[in-house]
Amino acid sequence: MTVENLKALESLNEFRLTEAEEEKALAVFRFMEGEAAALQSVNTEGTEVMVHCMPMTNIFREDVREQAFTRDELLEGAPEHSGDSWIVPRLVK
Amino acid sequence: MNYFVTEIDRAGTVAVDDTILVKGCEAKAGSHILDGFVPLFSSDAVERLVKAGFTLRGKTHTGEFGLDIAGETSYHGVCKKADGTLSTAAAEAVAAGAVKQALCVDVNGAPRRGAALSGVDFLKPTYGTVSRYGIIPTACSGEQVGVCAANAEDVEEALSVIAGHDGKDGTSLPAEKYEYAADKDVAGMKIALVKELYDAADEGVRAAIDAFRAKLEKAGATVEVIPVTDVKAYATAWQIMLSAETCNNISRYDGVKFGYRAPVYKDIDELYVNSRTEGMGFTAKMNVLFGSDVLSKNRYMSCYDKSLRLRRLASEKMKEIFAGFDAVLCPAMSALSVPAYDLAETFERTERELLFTTIPNLTGIPAMVTGGVQLWAAAFGESTLLSIAATAERMAD
Image 1 (cartoon, rainbow over the protein chains, first blue to last red):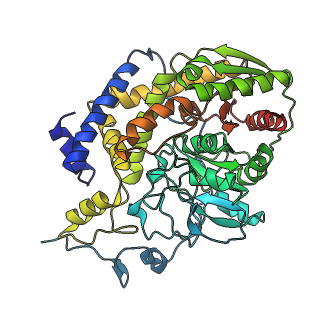
Image 2 (spheres, rainbow over the protein chains, first blue to last red; image 1 turned 90 degrees about the horizontal axis):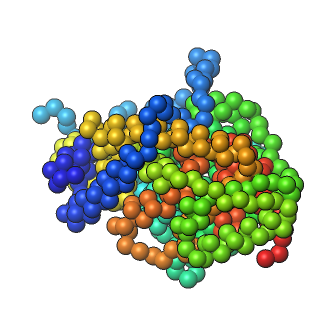
Image 3 (tube, each protein chain N blue to C red; image 1 turned 60 degrees about the horizontal axis):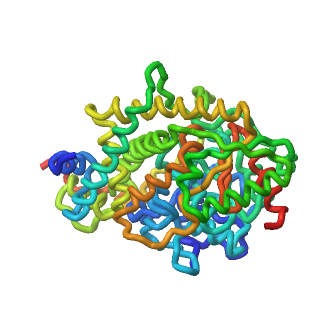
């Protein structure tokens, strides 16, 4: 992991680290790269991936609306709202 | 000591950690980014408890998204033991008798470590037996709601209520109800002790294991030391999967629809970046960064895909073990005391502790901490765990 790649990941994930945090993050990446490299010593050839730890099947239910919240209830939790909309900065310049 | 981030009813007997939704009660999962989030509904587990007549005392502090050792990364206050060392607020509340039971989400073993540090019980049930509807998600493929209590009977009482199929949770298993018992005869049971985990723990933990083993043998069980040679690889695999899932789950917090919004921004991009920069702690950010890296094109096959294959190997290993044993005995963590430390170290310190707690999260099997030690059983083997714990609790030290 390089500083440039780390900054790209920060940008991708929409947050910034301080310089001190970046230094620490690079150390963590070095540590985890060592851990991940050690995984390769375990032979998984012929082993299928396992996404769900328990056997899962799709759950079907009647196509009827349940538990709908009102627009007002949903807007109530927003940091800023007005009338029937969330308020965000102007998107079109 | 204040165990609760939110008090609900001082006469209540059950606590829930702050990643579990209670309608009308602010829910923050230990994170600044969720400040002001008041859910419109309760989790299925809480609904079941309330319907059965249990009363909620309050919401306990939890580490940010449950990603630390024992709650130390909470933005809203850390619970420490009387001697200044760490434990979870839920386990301390149970140990102090402030509540009879506490529900906690087990993402990376933190509630199990809390139980070991505070000398109480915690049971993470089989994946899919307790609904995850209404919990703030971190690592969906392995996290489960479990019960913390002072003894096995009290764990069983709450677990019997919250377990059962929920159509609102796509990972809920089909059985409508699960019957648990803490009175199975331990005599004749075969218990496996994992050599690699025993050897990796400190002297105090090994003494607790030795004492527990002696109780089991006195009760008529046999204990045999077995190797699980790839256990370190399984822990790394869960860290990779956990971070990848955290990265996806945390991406929804952007300061627009709910939660924290930074006070200063000049456009929508700055609103997102400033809100997330100010709203999340370093450990959460570190998990997001590592998670997005292991999901990237260059690392996907060697990290994420490899981990999914290791999950199958771990699952097959557990099936092999439980074909010959009733339960596994091992440490819950490396030491039974965690002094306060520099939180910049949380990611690596927690990753090292995953060695002891990963397999139940990775494979979905149930795990229980009692008397400072950890027990695992085959899927749906909760009664075996409860019975072993209850038997040991009845025996004098």
